Image (spheres, rainbow, N blue to C red):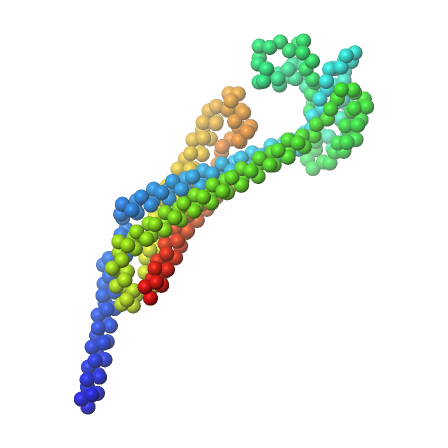
Length: 326
C-alpha cells in the first residue's frame, strides 16, 4: 500500500506540474505576444517593403504600358504600307503618285490609299532638317500610304512588281523590318522587367529573413520556454507569420499606393503636354501613361503577393529554428 500511495502521489504531482505549465503557456498567450506589435525594427521593415513594392509595381506597370504601346504600334504598322516615289528626270512625280495610287486601289485587301502632297512630304522632314530650310530645290520623294483591311492578306510581291513596272524609281515598304524591331524591343523590356522584379523580390526576402531572425533573438527565452513546455511549433510560427504578414501588407499597400500615384502624376503631366511636339512624341512612344485594368490588377497582385511571401518566409525560418531546438 505504501508503494502504491507513493506512486499515486508522484503521479498527482506530475499532473499538477503539467497543468501549471499549461496554465503558464495560456497566460503567455493571453498576456504577451511573441513579437511586439510595434517596434523600430518593424517600422524599418515596413519602409523597406514599401520601397521594394514601389519599385516592383513601377517596373511591372511600366513594362505593361510599353508592351501595350508596342502592341498598338505593331497593329498600326502592320495595317499600313508605304510607296516611295523618287524624283526621276523627265517624269512628272505628281502624275506618278496618282498612277501608283490608282494601281494600289485595285489590289485586293486594300482599304484606302492616300497620296501625300508635296507640302505634306516636306513637312515630314522638318523635325530632322528644321522648319526654316527651303526644300523646294531638293529632290524630296513623294509618299503614298496604303491602308489595309483588317485581317486582309495582301500579295506584296505582286503589288510591288506591278508598281515597279509602271513607275521607275519606286519602292514598296511593308514595314516588316520595323515590326521585327518592335517585337524584339517589347520582349527585351519584358525580360528586363522580370529580372528587376526578381532582384527586388530576392532583396525583400533577405530583409524579411534578417528581421525574423532579429525578432527571434529578441524573444529567444520566451520561444524556448514555450517550446520546451509543450507549445506547438505551429502556434509559435503562426505568431511570427501573422505579425510579418501584417507588416508586409502594410508596406505593400504603401508601396503600391505610391506606384499608383506615380502613374497618375505621369498621366496628368502627359495630358498637360499632349498638345506640344515633345508630348506627342512621348505619347507615341510610350502611350498615354493611363492606368488600365491590367495595371491595377498587377499592382494589387504584387501587393498581396509580397504580403504572403513575407509571412511565409518568417514562418519557414521559425520552423527551422524550432526543429533545431528539438
